[in-house]
Image (tube, rainbow, N blue to C red):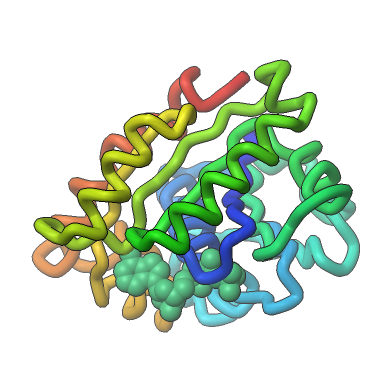
Length: 212
Ligand SMILES: Nc1ncnc2c1ncn2[C@@H]1O[C@H](COP(=O)(O)OP(=O)(O)OP(=O)(O)O)[C@@H](O)[C@H]1O
Ligand SMILES: [Mg+2]
């Protein structure tokens, strides 16, 4: 079973948005997917409640209540949505479940600084130091030709973790969430720029580069 965790101690950077989109992209390929929400805010589980019955099924797990006990043994992929402000023991316990960490970062100085601190904290963990977990950073809500994006881009190129995707700021993410869908399930004429951006990210998630 693949274990993919979306995390960053910074709030509002797109953890739930990425977790739901990653889960749906694997489900669309025919994989058996579980989506564990570790955040009592339950954004990922609320998205699942909105998911139309005719879309590929994803099993929801209330990780914040009872951990991973109910993850089906038959699952091929487990995607985990971590809560904001995870530090110390809580962070160590969460990372124990991950073999891949997806780390979204927004184009803003506050988010970059918070992410710098978080990456440093992650690197202190023995699982990360021993390369039992692979980390990939994602620039999220990107707007081209803005100073904020240039700052984020320059930062992620030297942040000491692989820089695996750039996802634009798009209403498609809001639209998709509302309908219980992923951007890859929106019509191509509407979402083709997002599909293009997900291509290298999907490839990374399915490659050895994202697995210990
Ligand atoms: N690429 C994007 N384009 C447009 N809106 C986005 C994008 N990514 C996320 N959002 C929006 O940003 C807001 C925060 O995203 P999300 O809830 O996924 O972040 P989070 O990290 O899970 O937040 P929290 O720390 O509260 O759990 C949401 O309103 C979401 O729809
Ligand atoms: Mg969230």
